[in-house]
Length: 155
Image 1 (spheres, one colour):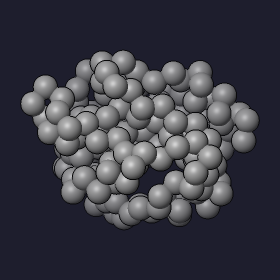
Image 2 (cartoon, rainbow, N blue to C red):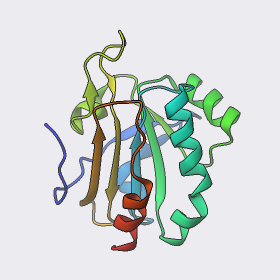
Image 3 (cartoon, rainbow, N blue to C red):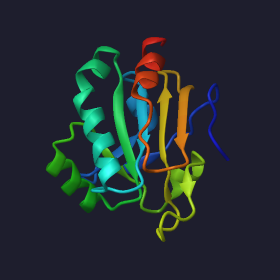
Image 4 (spheres, helix red, strand yellow):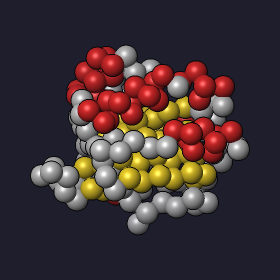
């Protein structure tokens, strides 16, 4: 079932790249969250998107937002990717594919890779309500970064 704008974002706990547990509700206690689902670490478009989010971190920070990246990669791969690209935000491993199912962003088959994350962005306010949702059917496309900033500015 897809998570829609105006609904409560499902809470979850996943290990980050350092194997530490990160809970969405714990992050929301600090402010809004940009939840970015990536199909796969080290792929071209995912790296471009992650680096764009990294480079916009200062602007997103002025909007009190925290970025959380989620993919079905292992935390080992996510650690290597985070280090290689100097990403300053947590990367969460949904290796068991539970959170991508909760959010309705499962890609059943992407060039032979089964049941990985679709490229998707959710802006979630401090109260846990989804204020922006963008789920891309073509993983070669990146999200609309201006709309992410607009959603955050409206909070």
